[in-house]
Amino acid sequence: MLDIKFIRENRDIVEKAIRDKKTEPIDLDKVIQLYEERKALRTKLDEVNAARNKAAKEQNHADGKRLKEEAGEFEIKLPNLEKELVTLVSKIPNVPSADTPVGDESVNKIIRTWGEPKKFPFEPKAHWDLGKDLDIIDSEKAAEVSGARFAYLKGDLALMQFALIGLAFKTLGDVETLSSIAADAGTSVTITPFVPVVPPVLMRTAVMNRMARLHPMDERYVFEKDDLVLVGSAEHTIGPLHMDEILEEKRLPIRYVGYSTAFRREAGAAGKDTRGILRQHQFEKIELETFVVPEKSMEEQNFIVAIQEHLMQSLKLPYQVVLKSTGDQGAPNHRGIDIETWMPGQNTYRETHTSDLMTSYQSRRLNTRVRRTDGKVENVHMNDATVFAIGRTLIAVMENNQQKDGSIVIPTCLQGYMGKDVIK
RNA sequence: GGAGAGGUCGCAUAGUGGUCUAGUGCGGCGGUUUGCUAAAUCGCUAUACGGGUAAAACCGUAUCGAGGGUUCGAAUCCCUCCCUCUCCGCCA
Image (cartoon, rainbow, N blue to C red; front, side):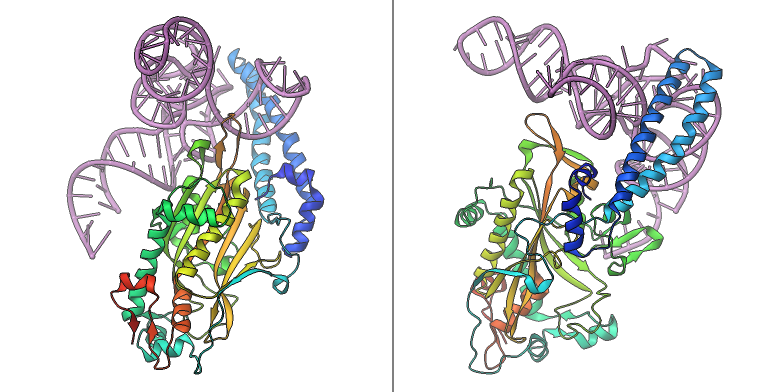
């Protein structure tokens, strides 16, 4: 959530953010009014408590008893007020960066493209046909066993999943590679290897809420009996890895690369992408999450996008980098960048990566802070991004590398992991 | 799932109703001493909100896992929940 003081001092900016992001309208007067009420109540309670502490010290039973009752009233009102305020403020989206285009998806800005959509001397097939013909994707049996939007990955496609995981973890753990990526991208970030993480996929509902990722609830698989939610991304459990902590500045940047299954109900996507494995209830994803000082966070995001591009270039997949518009980026975003990869079977670019700069929007409620070298304490900035959405990357490899006979050439950088160079 | 022991300042630990303004050690920061390092020694050492200030200092309140209760007064007593550890059971 945003800082309430920031909201008070920058009403017009916040109002514009709400408008531009087209989120639920919020009555900012009410927010400020609640804030003032809380402040006044708090001040009164402090005064009563001061008197009460004095009475206790003097063992003045009569005054103590009276003041205790007085304090009791405030102690009921205050938490309610606090709760109401946080609920309201949590609905206010992050403020978009200056370079974020204002509008819906249609004004998303293509920053650059890499590679050329390949011309095939034959009609390229969609991955669902390739997958079925090669017996490496089985959606039919999955539908019987689990339902729509599930699939079995089999044989060499299952192997390729682990090859992608291997490539990602190797690259993000290699300081030399990271240094050259950062230098090529013109960033001067401090290079540290990403710490590999296999996070939990079930988490407490309350923590998901603090990550600003619980809503819309319809998108989440919820286990009410246990008060747990299934993650929709490794981000959800890696992001809170430092909640309620104050990190020393010299520990930053902290960088993680995590692998997990992601679960999504796809409640609002009925009828969309129903064929193949583009949009599944369950998919594997490698995600990265970094914690940096505020003034470095945008450069960090540029570094992250450079890493994403490096990996896609290793796979020789044509892609475009897109700066997401206010309407297309999520509420917690300050700046959102997507990579869309060319999918010949669908004759279009499809989203395979996203990179979200959250500034302090998540860290404020997670209570993840940094103690600067001068002793000041402030919320860290967080970046979160896809390394590989494995299903979608597999689609891109399958469709881009297909040959006339229906076989698929394995990208050079994955051959070592798979022990072969073609799927047939 | 059963039985037991616990959760205190960055870490370790003391603290069984007012003397806790939470002690001590380690770590960290600063000073003195010092050719350098080490050692010694002195001081400081959290967060939030409010007041105060040019900025500090400083003052008030809250925080001893979380929330409630008893009491004039709770780290300490009671209740609920969460978590950790040990043993048993079950289990990949």
